[in-house]
Image (cartoon, rainbow, N blue to C red; front, side, top):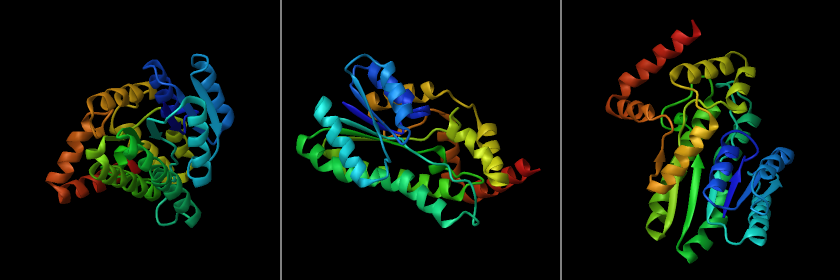
Length: 260
């Protein structure tokens, strides 16, 4: 049985549908309870449930997991998908930084704190962190997003190293552009938001959420830690590691080009 946060729209909804097709019962959590309920209603009867609430709140996460287990039994897969963009640089307000860290990072930590003891006891479990290519590279125009996606990747790496030999599968999903509200809402963030949007939409193909969900299913099945719906991200990441100074210079050039 799988629990998906941020499952009412976009990538989360697509993953819920994909896991349902794989035969899993799913619990869809979202701050927008109505959106979560709409996705659950699409799925086969008595196989899906929606729970509205804030995935970064420890009390809600406990309620979510307890509700899921009462309805469908043990949680075997948790998809930490809820996220916020947070356009802006050094001018981004403290509240934006707090929100980005809470939703993009601490929500993953808090979920893992609740799940890992029971999974270690059972000797199985699957934790999927939906991060971003920004966690491997960077995100022009959005310091909070870039920094917190790096942190989400780092936490997923730590989980994989610490619990991977105990029967726990850990996967980190790092797409570039995906056709979601999160991407398009970046444009409302002023000049920095427009830069972030242009950087993502010109770097490679903008995928449909269903394509990302397919990559997630295949990645879990293959036991891969790093799931890259845009395969070219691996080349970019390897290029960054092989020539860090050159990569920094290239990103400066790219930013100047986009800013005209």
